[in-house]
Amino acid sequence: MERGRLLVWLAVLVGLALIVLAVVYWAEPAKSLPSWLPGHEAGSNHHHVKHGIASFLVGLACLVFAWFRSAGPRPGRATA
Amino acid sequence: MPISYGQAILLGLLQGFSELFPVSSLGHSVILPRLLGWNIHQNDSYFITFLVATHLATALVLLGFFWRDWLRILRGLGRSLRDREIAEDDTDAKLGWLLVVGTIPAGILGLLLEHKLRSIFASAQSAALFLMVNGVLLFLAEALRRRAPQPQHGDPDGRIARRVSWRDAVGVGTLQAGALIPGISRSGVTMGGGLLVGLSNEDAARFAFLLATPIIGAAAALKLPELFGSQGNGVRGPALVGAICSAVTAYLAVRFLMRFFETNRLTPFAAYCLAAGLACTLYFLV
Image 1 (tube, each protein chain N blue to C red):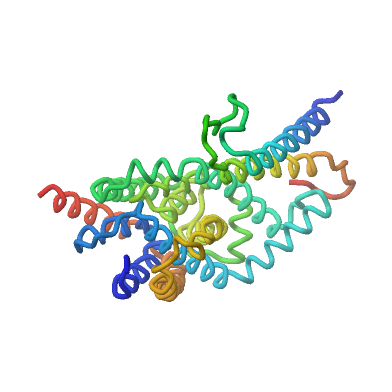
Image 2: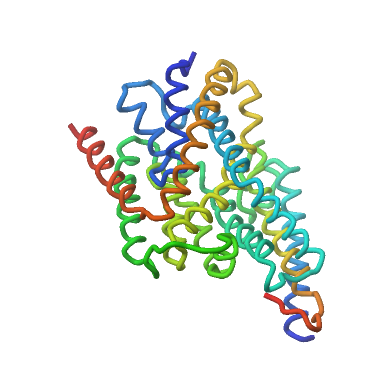
């Protein structure tokens, strides 16, 4: 697989994973988060809304990056 | 009532000016109550609620002041998403994505570090010290700038889009996170960053105000439930009055600054920050 396509697929996978992670942060209290995840706190009912927003934004950015990178070459039009 | 109407008016007027002047609104909001002997601290929940209202007002004023630009930028973003490319001559799209790229790191750092930094640097003494640091940063930005101030011609957004690279946008945007420390100015560090990447004072100020709008607006919107929830009880009236005062001074400030930076530098604000920070530090020591 060429490097450009690999990067696109990687961005899509990371983007989707981060959006799923955002939903987990919003839905689960800190005590229910996996112990390896930032924000895990035993016995805490606090929902890490801000962690979720941060994760969602980075995930969205990855998907937008993939959207632009996966566009084919356009004859006669310069790209930035 | 935790904040009186008189205090709300004074804090609102101060917030509007100091949010857009490169002198740190948060720093001033921490220092002023201490100087006047008010029992208001930046980590008090009602004070945070009050600040949400004044910040929201400032963001709305910025949005209103640059609404034509935002409309063009949003259209540019839509065009580029539809075409899946940022055309070389589409400066609105390029500027729009520069703002997105600059906002993401600042937003993430803000979300993750705001609470910690707010509790570490809560005192008026540290705000006064960082006000001096802010002054030094502004002096340095002027000293290290790549080009001297000169009259600008043509479309300012086009100039910014051509001059600022993606890497520059990430760098300048990330600098905004410095404003989480009371005493460090968001507009100051972004204007300084703009100068370092080769923008004129006028364009650096414009870029800083455009960058600030989504961050200030989002930060305020995120905490809006606190204003309308139980935390806002007893502070909504003063918050509304403070927000109106803040909107008035923010409008005057952005109008003044956009003219001021056509021909002037950051130096007067740097001198003010150094002098005010030093005076407050000495006052708090005595």
